Length: 437
Image (cartoon, rainbow, N blue to C red; front, side):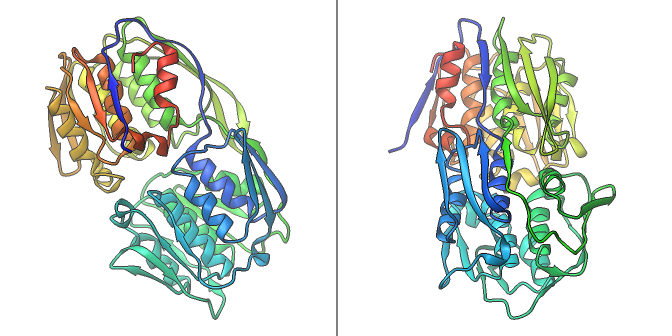
């Protein structure tokens, strides 16, 4: 049954403290990387959501024992050479491109034949950017005209290391190739055209794998690898992409103040925080430490009535690529013009996020126009409510739920059950802070 979310304009401030579920990217990686280790890994504050469940289900199909209780994931690692599967498992990745791309590299390293498929939306996502370099490494993998399903065949010979320049900066592709490189003969060097998230690099180095960064945007994995990797023991920082919605709510609703505890502060992910501050948002960021190389800390956001429009392009696009739906809502409240450029990749997310953002802003009465590689918004004026469809995109649903807090009349989001893909309890958290959902 499809859920509908009704949001009333906020008549009172939002106040409180929140500890968010673990980061989505780290949840995917730590669950998968734990399989590479020997022994029981323990990952606390694990994100139990629609977007992570397909990976855990796939691991179970591959014979990996795991248990998730009270936000703690335990995984029984056996090491890559000891992973064997009978037959050819069909692994359904749901809506998650991260699951599909990371599993492609992982299965390539393990030499396990499998079929990777997913939802209709996932079948629209580009996959040749990962299958092509994997083939160069000797992986017998096929795609369906550049898309899912992906079919991995039994491997007859060892993989080979490659020197490869990624055409698009992509942490998912980079991770898939580094996973495959774990089973390759020789060195693998990957160079990206710009920055991308570096969670895999930080985790690999913390795990003792021989990964170096010889130049900007370049990573290198050089054999020999350790024969045994120790199990993981960590508490995941809160998801910064989920935090973005609560920070925006505090910035937009008069007299609000919200503090988020233990949030991921990896600099490859903090573009949204940087652009908010450039717009005039009042944020206080307090670093608290690191875990497995990942910095985390507390963030407090307060109502910021004097936001100004800005231009976002270049490296900032990659550093906030998942936050553009909620950034667009903040831009609608900012005075003057906001322009986003060099963000064509937004068209290949769970939805075409350029079109999705612009059409919904227009439905609220906000002056917005789509461009081939971004959008333009003229903000600073009140907007009215409307009935909007989530369009099968969890971040679109949450962004326009937050827009409802600032609207003059109620906003209704249909298809809101998609929010559980990444932020279960989203509405309940906002209600505890004082919103009317």
